[in-house]
Length: 245
Length: 312
Image 1 (tube, chains in turn purple, green):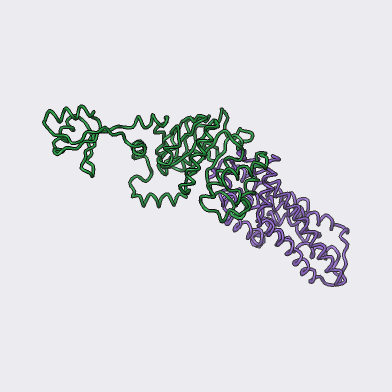
Image 2 (tube, rainbow over the protein chains, first blue to last red):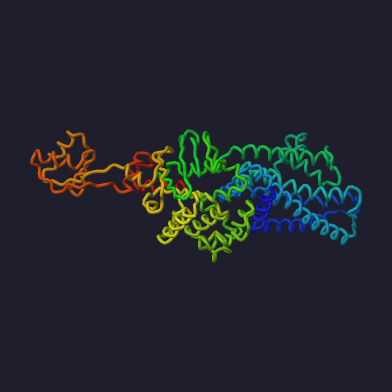
């Protein structure tokens, strides 16, 4: 599978879209975090201050990382490159595995850069308004690591959606609204259910305080991973049986 | 050597390939011929396990495609010339495909030279012409220096010079001992190039033979001119021969030897102005063999062309 990982890494880095989405993710994360810290009031507890700093960026940045994941397969179908790709890698689960490794890895690294940039921006902004925080307090290191993991899983979720749906416009048109407001909209009808949906559960990864959610970070992470694995499993089963044309 | 055994493939209720078996031998160029829509591309996709066959299998020197450890080093294929991300350079496109089968990067430059794309290697493929896409597709097929090549309509969209170039390339590859399997819906563009033919229509095998045998099997006719053609036509019908009146006033007779026609005419004192044995051209042999097997046989040429466009 190493050879396929190398091939997928060449593909990912040779399209400009990859770097465009990465740069937009980083810039947006910094801007959103700096703006969010402006709403921190005097006397807010440190944990809550950090929550305000850490939670807004992933709401938006996840969308870009999801798109990166989706395009890994969907663009191959869109441009027909899936034909030479599968001719070079006829064992389909190996190809799926290589894309998961490359996109998951890229999601983690990009997620780490995004998180580092926004934490630095947020901490600086807070100290400028006289609300200094230490990143080593309490749950904060765990939440920072969780943010990075969340981005990595988002990339995998995108790959699963892409292999399942194949058309980029449809995959993006379904996944993005769902991740942006679909779960919250569903939650307003079925409040008990909403916490168990993928992105709401996954949000516990980067939450410093529980914010009234019933799941603790570990369970939230496990649920998000399970949803992602299910999506990939269904995608893989169909991918095995489907014609390329 | 390629052995296709009992391949069948349907899309919904439409049968695209129907119990198709054939063999392709090394050291020869084998033309895969059939009208548009006869199932050539589907057959090739099924051979490479890109589409899943309902029945049958294809063996490449005894191995199924997906069981070959480095498939593109054994079987090179060009199925869709346009299958490139438009914002990726030709070089990066090939680099990724080379990496996937542990093909050294030096091969990338080598095949660019081989197909004459060296100058375009760093360009995004979005601006490529149809001919450049075909050359890039051929470069992809040749990348792993494979012993077997499967090429779907590689001459499509090439200018006469490009067609000439592909013909010599195919001959060269076969002379090096490779197995070359190349499809076309135009027999004329293959006639000078191929050694063997596999002819299909409506997904079924119509003929598999060496080129000479295929032409030899084709029916021969006799061209006849006479001032009393009507009378002669009636007499020939009595012999059970098939006659067609040509636009130039000649009669083409199938199913009677020239001697029999001459004797018949002499017995009735019908003067003959011409009595010539004609063998049909390769193109006619092909049309004869695939008659009624195309998808668009009842359409006009314009309709068929439009339908072909839609297929793409």
